[in-house]
Length: 116
Ligand SMILES: [Cu+2]
Image (cartoon, rainbow, N blue to C red; front, side):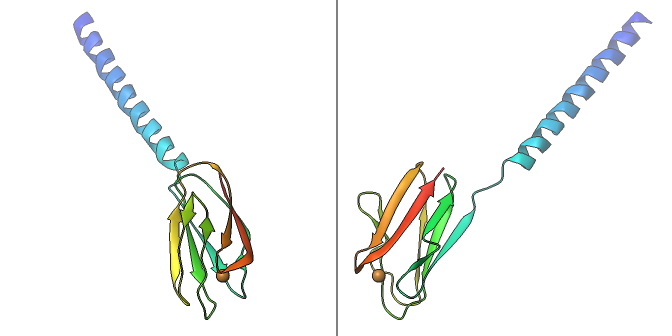
């Protein structure tokens, strides 16, 4: 009788452990939103939006809609080199910080990438 009860208790404990494991796995999936992709459009010799805020691991895509090339250059951090008309360039942000960037072909073009 006692032995049977012990077995039942053990079975219940194992069951509870499995439930707990499944619950924590479920919560993990719910909260861990994957990396996102952000888009910055280059149009009319401007970055739109000028400032983009992302999380570490996110990817930013700059799409050049102007009929001539531009760059996305934060010296020492990232540099797209020339993005031809109609082309795009992407960068995955790995390190938190605030990065001012320019177009080396049109130094009046300025943008900021904030990585949280
Ligand atoms: Cu430019």
